Structures are given as structure tokens and as C-alpha cells.
Image 1: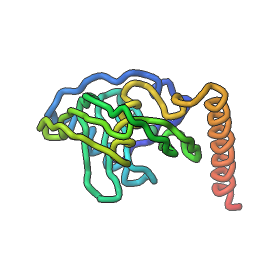
Image 2 (image 1 turned 30 degrees about the vertical axis):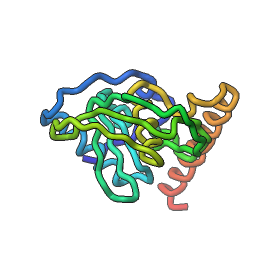
Image 3 (image 1 turned 90 degrees about the vertical axis):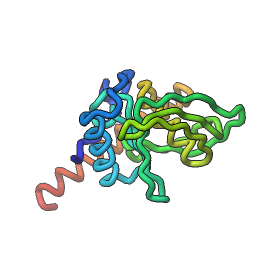
Length: 175
Ligand SMILES: [Zn+2]
């Protein structure tokens, strides 16, 4: 089921998510909802809190088309080398900024069927895993920037949201 994506300003995005029961119908449904919602969005990853569910689950679908679900994930290692990359977030549309993160990351998690796995990732997958994992800790990519830059990004988001709502109203009136 496609769910509404929670946007910046909601308390939910600042809260820590709770572990889920591995291999339960509820967890499988949550994974399906995350994938269904992600399919309708211009993004590559989505975490529970972003659809209003404070559970430790996120999904990733990159250009390779592989559906990757991470249930109760744990980051088990990160490389000392870091890299800067421009990130965006479905909860903060129209806002992009450079974030420095480790190049590689190791993660332990369960898939949607309760099968445990270890994954060593680099490149865009490593980047996405860290971004989504942050959501489970109530952290956003803009929280990695200095406070002045963060404020600037929040203002940009608010301005863009205002423009969006104006154009939506315009469309309703047929203009
Ligand atoms: Zn995000």
C-alpha cells in the first residue's frame, strides 16, 4: 500500500525507531508498504519513520532494480576513509547538500522473510544504507551540516513547500 511520506517538521522524523519482530506478517507488510511507496517517489531508499512508522526497517532500490530490505539493521563497521557526496531526502524535497560519510560500511540485518545477512557495501549503496540508518536514529542528512547551513536548508525547504502548495491551489481552481 502506498503511504504518505512524512515531511520535515514532523516530530516523527526526530524520534528513535523501535526494533520489530523479525519474520512477522506485520514486518512483511511494512516492507511491502515501503517498497510500494518508494516506487511512486523519485528516490532510492525509504525508512519506516518516513511513512509514519517508528520501526527499525528500511528498504533500498538502486538503479540495478534489486529490492533490498533491512530489518533491525546494525552497522557493524565503517571505513576510516570518508567521502563527500550530495544527498537529498524524500522527506525534504527540493533540498540537496554535501554530506561527508565513510566510504564503506558493513551491516548486519534480516530480510523481510527473517533471514539474517551480513553485507559489506561501498559506493551509492553504502551511502544509502547510512542515510536510511540515520532515519532509524531520528537523524536527517541536514543534521550532518553546520547549524547555519542547516537553517539555510530548512528555510529553502519551507519556501519550496509554500510554492508547491500555491501551485496545487492554483491547479484546483483550474488556473
Ligand atoms: Zn532520507
